[in-house]
Image 1 (cartoon, rainbow, N blue to C red):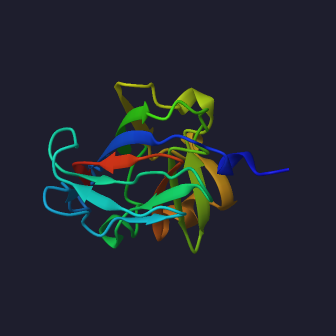
Image 2: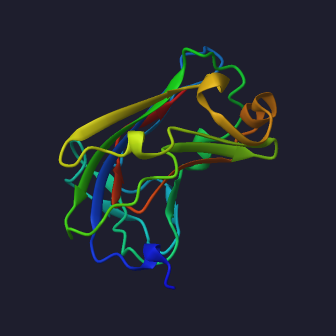
Length: 184
């Protein structure tokens, strides 16, 4: 039996605008505007990242066209978003604004999660399942608070995870575009 994830005959589009809002004074704000390039964001899986000048919300963006073959795509934040998040409070958050477009008409795969963080201390994810699938043809904003009650611990423990984040990623079989990410 063939893996159903390899039988897609459509392209998906997501415009994803990351806005990291960390309000702790110990952290300087970090941002990604995508005005001129993809700013060291990476994509794993079977697709590559590209920069588009005008398809953001508004302006430039990072784009991933999912060919709907192979593994899920993971969009990895550059190292400026990694590090010690232990000074964050439960009122601090990360946000993503997503525009979804299934232009090929095939069936849809729901994302495993919207956000995932990991490092030597373990891994955690939040916003899992069909409830968090983006609405077609409209911008959907997702906000995840840095509150351990809102995250599923995959391994390790919360304090060890947020003390040394090495990977911040988003997941999906999607064309994703990121714009205006900030973290502080």
